[in-house]
Image (cartoon, rainbow, N blue to C red; front, top):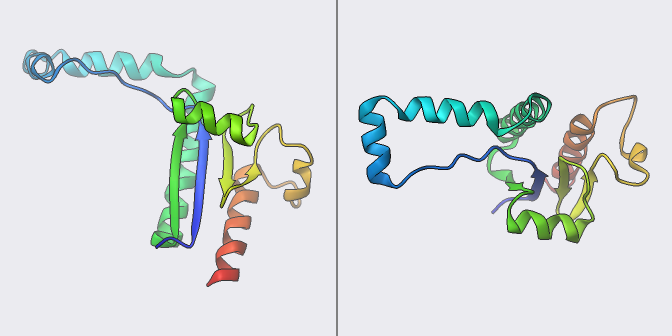
Length: 138
């Protein structure tokens, strides 16, 4: 069982697919990749896409570093669950990082400067808090 639960509330790229039979036909005709490339290009604005890539790299680093000690859930704010999670934690800007039910990083969190040390960014501050939490439990 995981020692720490991390919920990350963010905008995530979404791809829509046709029915399985049409997908096979489109793939055989060479059209499937063109559809996917067009969807990926239009899915998110460049700044949001860059933030998503940065967040993905950060999650990958955490997963490599701590493995099964973490339970990481990526929640798309455009989903029903994301909507209710945002309401519950009063999140208005993304990404919002929730560690064991406590918001530890959000762009609009009151007093958020208190979690940052020496000018580190929000992801670095969140990683530090995760390491501290795991250190205290491990």
